[in-house]
Length: 298
Ligand code: HMG
Ligand code: MG
Image (cartoon, rainbow, N blue to C red; front, side):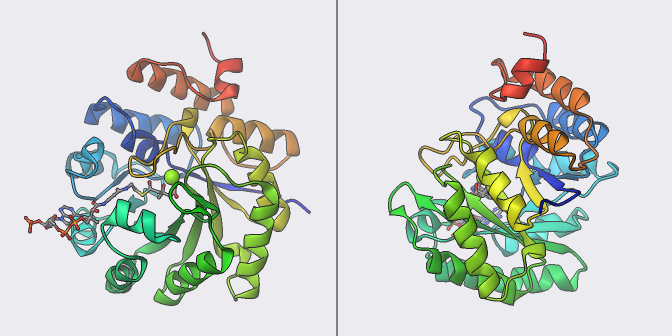
């Protein structure tokens, strides 16, 4: 059966804005996060403490984070290494996320490391974050397909997931970075992860919508018992180091489906749509979300 409640992990301010061509002013990002909270979202990924040359769009993390730390929500931030963790903890971050790859090609492109080198970097980072009392999410990218390597063998994904779990990650997020997965792959991976000792309660899903499959894949995950779903307001998003990645599952499209299914999210769809329309105004183009286009002013 389906869950009665889903926790939406909102990634618009991070995954969404990391891929924008134009630099969004820090004040606008802060206002975006406040509006997302006001719309009922309670887990709002705020930014990344990555190298500013690698992701210039998020180079203002030090300015932004203190501007939103009073927001009454969980505000996870991405950290790629020790330096990122130090920067995040110095500002009082209480939720961090490391990000691994199931494939060598993307580990190299995104982290300049092999898969095992990046896991070795994460190990002390996760331990120190846990020691500091932080909650730790472990992302795994390219869980289903990779732009350089094609379809990704699921045991390869399970190995990286198990390594992150062994390090002490509190939850994992299974990334379809380039949005190629279909529901049977989602079911197969979740089943394999359960068999490897990873409980569904610790697994979230992170679908990009490149091929229009994100909502179908989410439904398959819900049927499996997943209750943590990543989404991005207005369908913003994409990884600059993964060619052919487009936006995430739009939070509004997700909420529309969940509301129809009678699954609680705590999100006010009208307030969220208004937020996405407001953000689209700042970005200078209409939202990719079908629901925003249907409900919002044109
Ligand atoms: P590197 O060039 O190998 O870095 O990059 P390094 O370790 O050799 O260090 C070089 C210099 O960078 C040093 O400075 C470091 O201090 C500095 P120097 O001593 O030469 O003056 N440095 C840093 N400065 C600030 N903050 C840091 C940091 N780290 C090193 N954290 C690195 C390696 C990991 C840093 C780089 O590859 C990087 O920043 N990558 C981030 C890429 C990224 O953010 N991608 C998008 C997020 S992942 C994603 O979107 C997928 C996801 O959504 C899930 C999905 O969809 O699948 C999560
Ligand atoms: Mg992503």
